[in-house]
Image 1: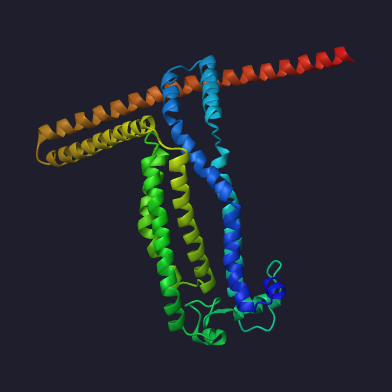
Image 2: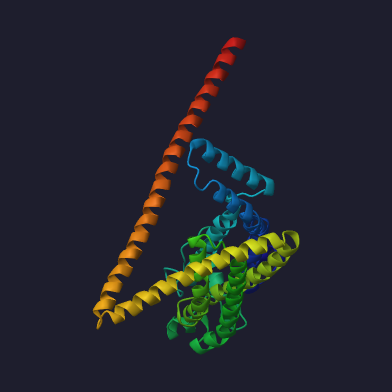
Length: 362
């Protein structure tokens, strides 16, 4: 359309289309991204009250208490306008869209017939002529379909050399790595500030993000400089990562103003984080004592006895905790089963009442 409608040459049309697709898709999903971030912040805001409800009903496993707890949680979420589904929508939409764009660019850059073929298979709505135009598209003197693992002969068909490709993509890859790292640092900070210290999954996720922040820039650099990644994909990386960076900053500042964390929330988060640190400290102390006793038992009979007693005590404590959890779980499962039966009976009674009312009217 850009080529025929605005009279642009093929190269300019393809370059504008590449960036235009990123801008269009990301612009469309801005409301959903905001909804996701807002939902995450609301989840943090309701956490103190939600924790209080959990503590209140922690040891109450009868059907009426479970029902009462569920109703209060539902009321709390309704009060704050919280929705679990809101956090999933952007990912469900963005991932397929960008995966599709990524695959199209790869297939056009690496056509099955070879880059020197006279005819190319259609890719979706893209015809053979569209694929040929893409292969001939250049930004400056660099073809956007080229990548460093192409042979010298293949690159010569596209009108480039490996050194030219590397010189062109090097600053782009560095920019993409920097944007990616900044995005992950923002995510780490935001996650750490609002960390749900009571959730093992949330704590583990934070560790994964930290590890990814260290590894990901090197991965991007390696596959970008030395892998079969076309220039078009690298341009896409830069545009997408820059957009994500700007969007993350804007959304974070907006959330800070619209849904700020009050003193109550900061105190709660700090308190739960301190409890997490205490658990970690206890775990480290246990490992240190176990290690010391293990070393001492090599040359001391008394240490061997102390080590056995220490391990036996630890196993007994773990078994007691596990038994307590199993007991609570069994009671809760039974109560939930009873609650489901009550709800099924209530639903059946309502249907029968509605049926009788209808028959009476007839």
